[in-house]
Amino acid sequence: MDTNTVTQAAQIISTTAMAKLGAGLAVGLGTLGSGVGIGVIFGKSIESAARQPEALPLVQRLMFTGFALVEAQALYALLITFILLAAK
Amino acid sequence: MGEPHVIVHVPFQLFGINLSITNFVVMLWVAAAITFVLLVGAARTATITGTGRLPNFVESMLEFVRENISDAFMGHHGAKWFPFVATIFFFVLFSNLLGLVPIPGYFHAGTSNLNVTATLAIIVFLVVQAAAVKTHGLKYYIGLLFPRNAPAWLRFTLMPLIEFVGVFARPFSLAVRLFANMTAGHQIIIVLLTGDLIGVTWMFHQGIIWKLIAPGPLIGAIIMDAFEIFVAFIQAFIFALLAALYLGEALEESH
Image: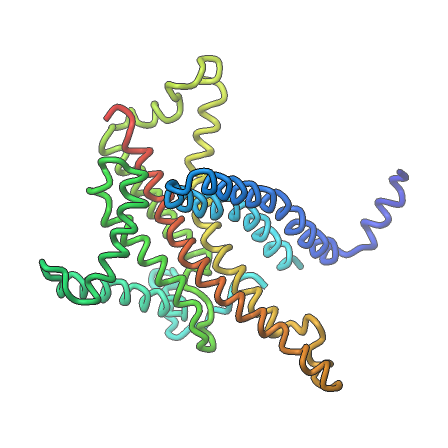
């Protein structure tokens, strides 16, 4: 890759545009891992509740706990998005 | 984008600190007043035989908090610290739920402000450290930074760094989790209603078929509103749960 064109591009594109691009990338890539995590949590909870229905209250409580903790990871990325959108 | 608008009602400063009465302050006061009136009112009207609707309702919520948060994560210390955990749960719950009232200027939760959630997280952090130092003394920090269960080659090299960062990462994650959850839902509702996402204003000027499709974002906003109620409950539950978990972790070991 020619470093001259990269530096030229970085000089032409404004920092506001780069900040907004980064904001879109941040939340887009950040929700990938959270999506996988939530899918795994709910899949395993449904599987274990189907295998042993008496454990459903315990499994449900742990499922909501795990869901909120995994969802928070995607929202850390959303926080970075908010910070980047406010850039000048 | 990001934080909601702050409307200052009564500006006043005290020793250079801005302590004005903003709309967030008013919402937090209303949430605290609702918590106080609900819990104290239920306690005053409670009878031995268990009659009355309000005491039974409040007692069922308190039993939920005690069984799922206090006893599950704190063991036998749960009884002593249950009022603290229950207060945190109810205050965060009512502060979250009040954000769904569509009064102009007040359509955001009291906790959708990073200052508020950071204050709550700092309170939890200070209470955890004070409780740990009170039960274990200052040896608690030695046991925390050099944990007994780690292998010796990690115990003095990497674990102190990890544990030290962990001590400060926990209140940070508490604050950010509550703030981001409360803000994100409201942002989605606002963008759906005012963002002209599918070209609603153009659609309203077309034929009858376009006019029927146009209320789509409104339906989406109603669904997101219902989801926000669910998220308010879940986030209050998680905040109280993590507070009880950190307290339980700090109070255990050699008890």
